[in-house]
Length: 322
Image (cartoon, rainbow, N blue to C red; front, side):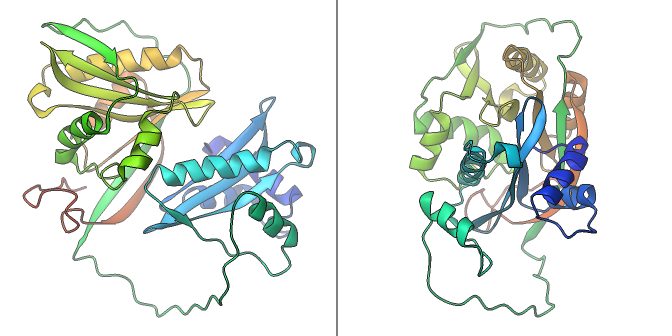
């Protein structure tokens, strides 16, 4: 995943790959591209050098990718294909079922490359006109998202185990029903909706991937919370989900579960750990992540469609406001 410190190297790669105008500020262009809404920038490295990039994003149910660039000495190694496959996986994980691309008329090599990867050529014209009208915000919610990272294992004492009969077990190949029970029950107050949008087949592909580790905290034999470590964006590990059942909040289980998960993640010796929180989350979530060793590196503001209108969240739920 792109970091702000990568901007210079990415900009240089784009210049060498012919993705920028001769007088463009490569670092600024890379930073701006990485901050687009509903998108992410991925980088490929070899011997600690950035040798490839690919950005992916989506608008409603259709995804796209661009900024595909590979260093000259890394071409022919499969770097471009792996970047596209990673971008596809990122989009698939967000419930995007289709990718639409527009290529220049003279992009024969790019077209043949994508056909080889399974992309089809659709007939027809693309016609656009900007009317200067912005969508109404009546049915939308403002969300401020803060992205956090941890670049080295924290030096802190371990937390004591909270009182009670506690067990932490990995849910290996969990059933769809059990996972949805955890996700929906824990996430409903905080408007977790990404996994609610996914059909069972797509969700099953994610949660049964050997690189996705789901650990469930049990208290007195009852599921009290879970944490999900996603090792797919290697060399990084993302704390994709973390939360508690409503009746277990405020009893010391959250810090214990998070610290345990971070210690487990660092056993893989990743480049860094990442996560994010937003203004819809528990009001103490941001402080909890900071105390655990995370530091913010980017923030963005989005307007999202109110999930209550689509039936993803019960109508009686009220979102937290930024």
